[in-house]
Length: 280
Image 1: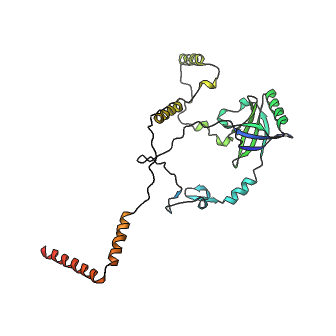
Image 2: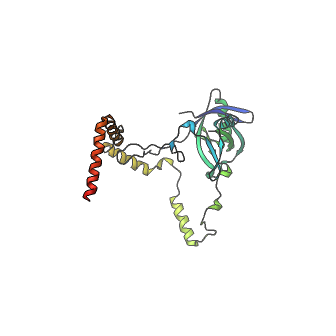
Image 3: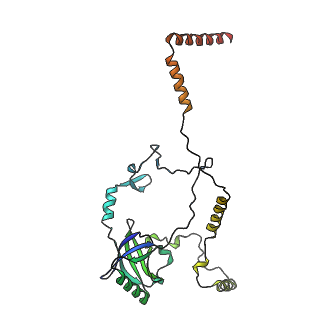
């Protein structure tokens, strides 16, 4: 399993060297955007709309929009210094609480924790202590240049860290529109709803749930592949500006004509023009 972070967990004077591994993976089927005519994958370029030119990495800086159209520019060096000043590789457990005290709306991402060299005994100690106390640890960690709140708990004999949102990152439920203030249901309706819930109540078995849409999409892709109903991008052809080429050739021909011939050509054109006017 790929290691995405190395550091330590600390609680009190106990320090455990650890590694973090992503506990979940994205199973979405990635679809590319193609040009309908030639089936070439579309490129997404970074273009400055004011200068009308494509930008390279060195020409791009970070900025924070303070008001519409006004930015504070932050240089890479400033961000680097700020990051280095807060990049202590440690998961510091600051509190222990009961897990049911945290509403699921706070949860973000999950990471498996494995012990690094020399950390197996302390790892086992924390795992056993959390299991016996039926508590989880609330911790702070710096990941991807951001301080995050996290929960350390036991999952199937493995320590698991789940990042959780800070309170100011969770929107207020009071801002949700059109929520009825009072229950406008009859006793009979409520009894019927509870009866239906009781009938559908079961133990949670995650294996029985799956992404039906993803399965159908994958079957469609496989059927097209088997039936050879697939397309290939059109090969990029070198551009030739025919108009410019013809203009350049004509200009070269005109330039190479002797002076006398050029004079005759102009005289002929002038006579034709005069004759045309008299005929009118």
